[in-house]
Image (cartoon, rainbow, N blue to C red; front, side, top):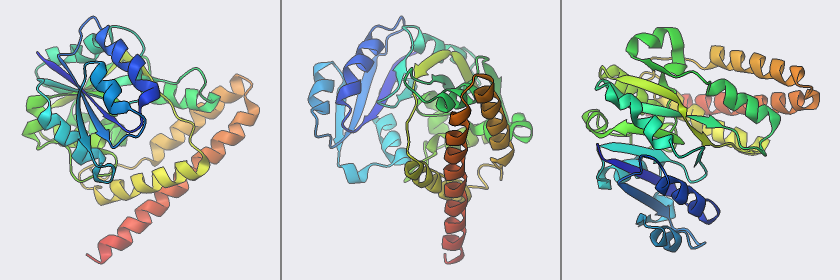
Length: 290
């Protein structure tokens, strides 16, 4: 089993050296590290090459989450395609070994890792990550869609691995696609009869500090994509899971004395919800004119 690590980058200089060093220190090191760079201006390309990565450079305007990752997958040599984002840092040196362990089951096509909020993350962001990425691992197939809803497709390319043969069998990532290529891939793999896995022991540090405006714009785009591909996602809705998350996070924040953070979290949720709803409405109107 050969392993290719694929990292899309754009001005990743502050992250790249510690990330590539951590990957080289793994107990199961990758056979290849492939960096796909979108016209960085901070020396990312030279740094990546100096650290032993193979680099493919593309114009920044040509980047899209589905198409760029698919191009990289086709360029990579590994039997296992392991995707990371530039700001995800493996927690320890067993990350790759743990993430690829579920592939011992030949029916498992993709594995998602656990995301742990960085130490400087906001309290509500830490609780959101802990809710979405629990400490218990699991494996599931298409029969879980009726029970888990949208969660059945919850594989994140922040830290995920795909069996190449299964990836190619379903045609690779949708392309062009500006977001949620991982969810659509998960749905395609389940529909093709494969299993998916979540490996809690394979963890990376990863979190964001988005402004309300950034959350709105991000979720507006997500809403458009989810509406456009609703049938592929079995018309699963996010509402029920979203309410569970909100209740859980508010309970944890109150319990830990972060009262003011509850207000910030509610504002954040409002921006997400509004963005999602506006995006879905925009997409429905756009589809009416096709």
